[in-house]
Length: 308
Image (cartoon, rainbow, N blue to C red):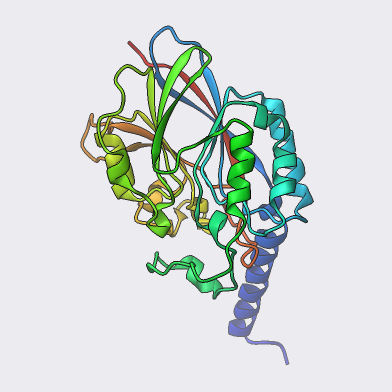
């Protein structure tokens, strides 16, 4: 007896779903991509600066394909590296991570940490990845060797921006940075970094792992023209056309990845106070190794002079 039309439709749906899962887990999660964007934030007359934004690697020691891709990024020869956290997902990941960063460690850099730099990932119901942030924090799992990771970055000359400010001169441009520790864990101390950003700097930059609105709003109020963040994975599982379903924080899904303005405004002619770049990141939790319509990425931002 031939199957009924309903059975055929259901069967086709199951096959399509299995094919989608296979693609998301076996193909797209390894389809590493370099994004390129241009941001007009430098003073008139400045030469362009090339900034490599890395985030959410969630590295485990056996991810040879990811490590090779990361190693290849040094050929971009950026002027600055900005790392917005969630680098590791295993206690043995630090040595291969630092080795793969290679010549990038010789480039001026800044960093903040995310929750998965501090705590090991755990097996969770995968449906939770599709739900809005529930406020629960994974702080009872074993700690990762984050102090060793920090030491490795600092020994490379990168600035730790956890709840502090600092400055770098790169390519003749004076950069003033303000950073916070992970807002997702509520480790951010906004009072410690509150106040107008230095007006004598050529560019004021905010750096955070998770783009919670309380952080983005303060950075914008204090005069930071450019803000870097990660954490969202770009939604990780996205729909064609619609894009991200969740951000795992209170940022709207329309800005789950890429370059946008903040505050976001629907008022004509109101561009917002800051440029906001959110990286979709290059990894996933090892317990949910899938991406759909959201390739793993790094971004090379070319900072150029503002229009006079």
